Image 1 (cartoon, rainbow, N blue to C red):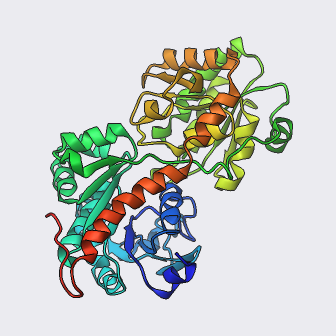
Image 2 (cartoon, rainbow, N blue to C red):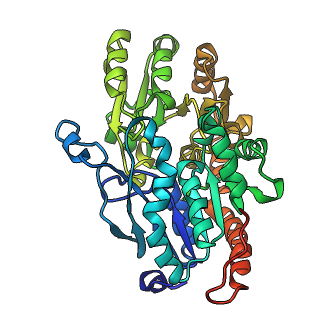
Length: 419
């Protein structure tokens, strides 16, 4: 596909997700862009990323400057159009109307994109994005795919949302999931097995690779003789940096030169940096924990290469790209047995999986990981075997089936979609 195809307007599919990088939120949904911009090399596409809005929210920014920053209506990213229509999103219980509001806000835009050739809506996250996408698919007579990425697990435990998830996923023409655990959730919600498919995330080994450890440690200010744990993720409760910090005093008794590096910042989920600072002070860890803030992907290889072990004591994940990114820098991974984590850290030579909420097991796994002489070459080989190419080929095959079905109808006809 020539880049000019996407710029000039000819498109095959529309990526639909409220979580997507923009000028005001450059770190949001990078994993979606990584995947779909690779698809764009073969299938021209546009992105529709609805942005929440309500009258008067600008006033809130006077005392909360980062509250709901507004992306421009249209951006060009790598030659691809990224639209940011606003949808009415009132705080509180009325957020349950977001699916309807997203669909209404995107209808005229999607109709215009359909006129430019779009024959498929590819949504990411089942709620509210997928819910909006199946409504748009119904109104515009377009097939819809939905990718499950992990938020569906807590949503499925909500009695008000579970039936809506089930209706949404059963209405989709294809349900992708980034892990088999999420595929099993889709089956439990009533989706036909033949319409589900696992397409895990991949890793870009041209971006993530080991660099000189001594230079990396100088760059981030960690002593050369240290043993180093590293975590990458938003500073929110779910990611579990506080659970790792709780383990540090006991670990330092066994590993006196231990340091902990944290890469990440605030996110739409929140920001618990103040709580982490207070926890460090309470535990007497001054100088042992290093917060580097959020870093762009091209810079992550430096703190990863400076470390000995990657750790993420997370509460919930779909398929954490950062595990493969750490492995591509030669790191073993210690993480919790939630979501698809055990599907990524699937062999003992790659790291350790511990039960979520078991502080003792986490501490013991980190202690053992710091003492282990890991086969870094085997870890690197595993990461290289999980590059994006095979994932994108799998997606293109699935999209091709749906697009071929769409191409069989004449101009102005409707595509026979399941609803």
